[in-house]
Image (cartoon, one colour):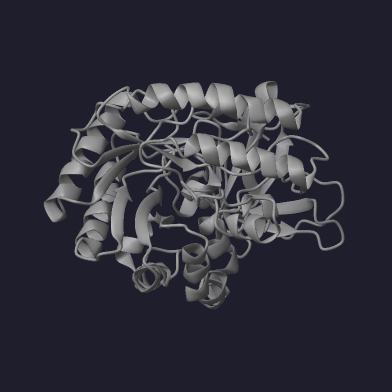
Length: 434
């Protein structure tokens, strides 16, 4: 199957190999029910619900763009695809795919049987909630009740940590009735965190980690299918929805003594978020936060892939912060096949030099809002990790607003501050954390 032109034309079945036009993003509606999005972000449509040609021309999905996908139990890679009128897709003609197979196709070699290969999938909150379906509320409640508890705030305070950066999704503003597939409970979890933070003398930065439409296409921004549409003009006004979330959060917690700052957006992608759009949004978000509080820090995040310093003078010098993220990861050309000492030297030289420049580049204080004690080094010893962690703590501690580790708890131990400290891979400096 191929969406000619990447979309905007008919769907054909004349390709011998797979590339972008032959790859479809699958939107799960419910069990066995899906919508198919093509390369240019249009949707596959069975015109009139079936009976004729399939086109990849729909701007948004509705009944004609919804299909049942039925797997062969004996060979799950074989599927039948059923249009909304009950007819099945078939490949009778290489120049067009039609939805006009009547009756029940068998699993022999016929025109209505397709091989479906799943390339990869996202595992963000959208996919988890959507996949669990009716069980999602219970699953998420169990996780939220057990993953972070008050004892974790005691652990942080006992280890000299004075603040936490807590990621939230835009749907928190409509809790306890968030839009499907999200489920209630995120707001209560944040309320709990504020209570525990107050109990243990810890401050909180609320970080809008997942914005409506996705600001980077990655699963941690709760992208539905890897497409980033937050900055797309026209249609849904995702910037306005984001501002309403900031307004809700600032209004709810402005008078809570644990509130330290509000981060307007996490990791907008340089390739999908234009500078002028983000500049406008940051100024808008600043004014909304200041409507509720004059003391909370307003935090911007760099565009991932962009110039680290491009927003240092966007906002006035009024408790304003620029968040930069430093990982010795995600760049195989730079960090692949390196040694422990190479990475330590990179922190002490390249990262330190950049940080010193950023500290004096503009109005904004500088915050290393994400770093972790993991790298691309193979077979590293515990001592290697200790030296790498010590170098990062020393250098990032020189940022004018400090640093935050990503993350506090994680199934991968080196990504977990808690496990790294408990197991001795990350050691507190003798004079305490900077």
